[in-house]
Length: 321
Image (cartoon, rainbow, N blue to C red; front, side):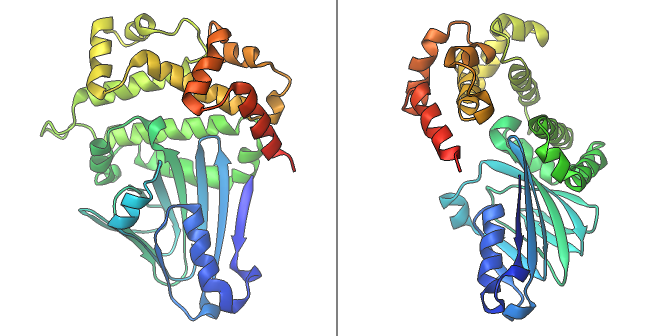
């Protein structure tokens, strides 16, 4: 589904406020500085969803987005932004990174750190939002990668992917396999960040961080397998079960509980989908890797505060026109 904002549909005296609200809704709370007067301000915003990833494209008159430390504290972002400049010359300032981004240039923006970004005159940018929990990478590695993405051999691949995904976004986002395009995008961003943020010789990024990211990605790809467990995961990564548990413990989470939570999320999402109404809760649970669906209701209630049946009724009622 595409959500479009077009300032031409707004009365001139209301445009500055409307444009500012549209830009914040598409991304995260920030101060939006527009070069008035109102009648000179214009913007279009397009938004496409690809499962857990999304793309939004903005074309505006002169604009400056300023995200402050207070906004970061009060409105933390669950996603990372990877943007490609389409038109105009953008200026990006975050931490130790100060960069001019020209058409075709890619940059990584940590939405959980203060930044300034914008352009003078007419400009356009396409931004891919990917969920941080699906990337499964430490904040330190992401921060280092943001300063060095241009040196990665994946840089041009990812930039071209975002451009092409945007060019075909209407058809791709409407396709039944749209979520798979989102998964592929997340994996590409993970590869870019791991490549750019790897150990620079100072020992600042622990090698097991990269290994842990691979483990998490493997688990997500194999959640539907009811036999998925420590032995299978360890074998797939050429390590002992003991080593696997040690890596997970050092990262601060239980492998088994994390697998269950990921499966529960998929069950929850399926229960909210109208095209899954013909499947029973037990069928959905088995489809998502639960060997014994009788335990799902208890785990689901513990995780989300209501039974699967209650969640399905509420979600499908909300989805009705």
